[in-house]
Image 1: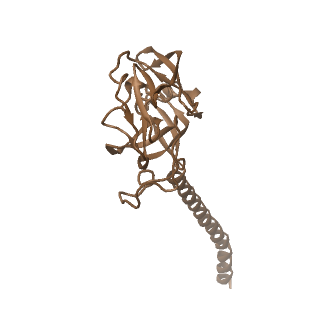
Image 2: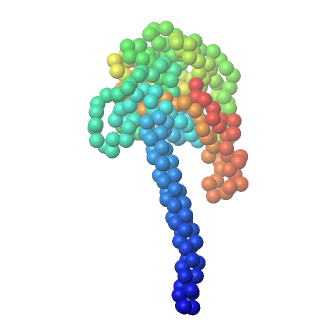
Length: 264
């Protein structure tokens, strides 16, 4: 009898442990399921809605700076084989659910001559437009755009600071944005007339003298298929002066005033 009682007591003692173990297992399952759904949602958002990009060059100064991190709206222009993860398989040609960018949009696209490289520039010319630079002044369909001096842009790096002439450029549809003129008499200040083909766009960097864009043969006109999306907002920005291995430099490296700034 004593042995039977001891066995019963042991069983009772083990019962709560079993329930606790079940609860623990259930907790792990809930955690795994939550993480799975979170990753799935993030993948869906990144694939079809917004994708993060960072700015590695100064071709879009003063609008975008090196070290800016931004969200690009992928649904703004529809989808193509370049904006969807097709894993190297050409599932379709052209665009689906497509819409054309507007003049003045800051767009991310695949470089036409090297489609593995992402570029970000401003859409200046639409299909059928005549685009030309004359003495540093943009002409669209043989009409000069409005260009107004706007003081100086302070171009800062880790070792120096310099002033660059800054201008407000207003496109025919009323979109205004800032552009820089670093070099008077730059070889791209006066160009031939570019006639934008159907299904293509003409893109330029806001830092006009430091931008490889549709004015040069290595880029050329942008096929609609190469568009990835429209740049919408800067969600983070940091200069290159801080050290990744020295947390004390992080606060001073962050450009706090650019966080969550809309892109125009």
